[in-house]
Image (cartoon, rainbow, N blue to C red; front, top):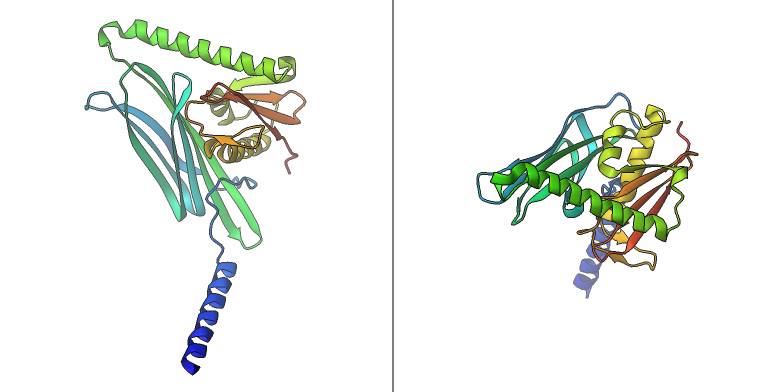
Length: 276
């Protein structure tokens, strides 16, 4: 009987010790969370590349980023679109590192316009009571052409088909949600990211950083992990259209408009808060 009590007592002590450890050493969150940008921290490299491999019908998709110091948490989220619809995603996170890199080989059987977009993020715990962020964006684009003899014409066709599909999809969503375009600046996510590397029109650099960080936090939680639908369910984002970012001209909010693979219009709304 004494042995049973002893084992039971040791078990309780182990549970308590584990609980205390978890409390004093919280696990990093496996998601992107925006914190104020630290202007003294920079990414030394932030790259996304799409390369045609020697193997038939294979594209090498790579992303790499290096911070100028080790971060409490490093995260990279990458999206690959084919003819305007999401083909694949890459996501990785590591603690106490400056470097992150990912790659994937993509096999294709038809000509495609490929667009890759990556958000590079770092969470910095410089002081016990203060948490900061650092972030960067990178992208690449490539045409995968099956018939090299007619390459120029196929590229033109891919551009036209992709633009037409996206415009029809976005217009469908704009009508469905009764969005008044006069009140917004409309930018595809690919174009939004390029502009946001500097400053978004009408915003300061610090405001732009906050908008970008909050947008990608929302995209990760409500798009990459599964598109959140009005009925409370979620759908795999693969096959969804390249999001259209609609920034309110009164600077109060932005909208993210996309369409699922099952052709359902989706609208995500995010408030634009004040920046210190």
